[in-house]
Length: 280
Ligand code: MG
Image 1 (tube, rainbow, N blue to C red):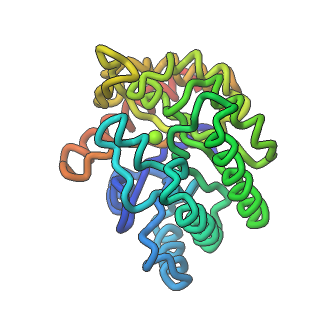
Image 2: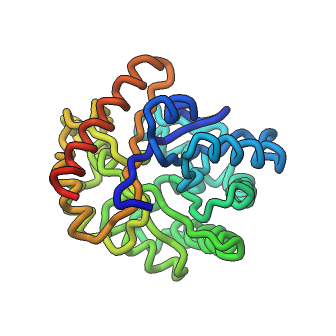
């Protein structure tokens, strides 16, 4: 694969990404895929999807786990509903995450990713140990499939994430870095965070956002790429610095406004292509 191929976050029947057709129309060579709904994760559908990708000349670079009942409405809601942290749904979602990894294997994809949720910052909190344990379980399941597990950033600081990865003690655990999430959740300056966690970054999102007035309490605002506080030229230069050459996957999740979504992704492709030509 070339250095820094453009990518886009896509969905089939679950999740908020764009449809595969949009990736094709915009001539994007790589995609990440939000895992389809449970009932459609079949061998036959996997084969059909692979055939479509091959026909369109698109490479699948990661499958993202997502679960029913997750809501990103505001920060407290994320804490209660997202990922493997909430205790009520943990066992069921851990099982489903393994099934998603198995479906990714059918798609010949060796990267599985997810938002773990809000991992407690206090490492002596029993919840912290519980989340460590299930992360190990999922890493081991992925390892047996020949896969790596990438954690999406945003809900914790760079230091907490480093601590967590080190405590999990598995060699197939890496990071999907999302600079806008650091801003939206108010968990730290993204460029500084990227330098800190750089050696674990194996996939990235290209998404932009503006800081909230009270970061960490209220959401920041997601905006068109290049119009927020990430600073995309510095972002790409920093990716260069840490030696990252993988896909630049654009994430813009406004499926309720498909025309605007497509236009904004087109704009992001242009901006990233210009920066690639300048820096890469
Ligand atoms: Mg993201």
